[in-house]
Image (cartoon, rainbow, N blue to C red; front, side, top):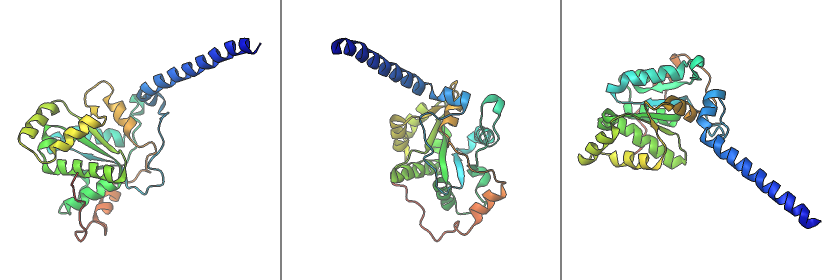
Length: 235
């Protein structure tokens, strides 16, 4: 009798476990689509909870990519629910928000340390920009030091060729970019689901909305002065 019971129960339990495992794998592989449709993060927690942060994201790009970056910032801040954008994020964008005449190194460090995500729009122009590379390396060092993964890289077309040229010319920091691309997941700009992937990588809980006086006060406050050592980039 026991043997008959085991012959029935064991295959049933094993089948149930296999079915749950398969469903779990399918759901995980489709997690971005689930998020796009239902605005749910089935496999994630808010790793920024209880952190006193100023921005949901800091967007870094080179000047030639300003139009593309501003379009991204506009969608992140405003969004379009009909298109599944789920906007409403509080974004810092360097060419718009950094104060004229301010301490650029201090502004970069503040933006990275006080943002839940750092989005680098990686292009050939980005690789050629000293400040963009500084922002990338500072963000990565912050990740390493704090054991977090909050750096989002959106890779533009033509980067592989530009990266090869930068490596040939021994551009400072280019080896860090190559290592990141070979180690971490990045987003291919222009792919069918690149925007959904970017939104999925954004913080789960948005910061409350503010007006742009907040950005001005953040960068012109008492912390934005030059009597502190900027974060040393030595990744």
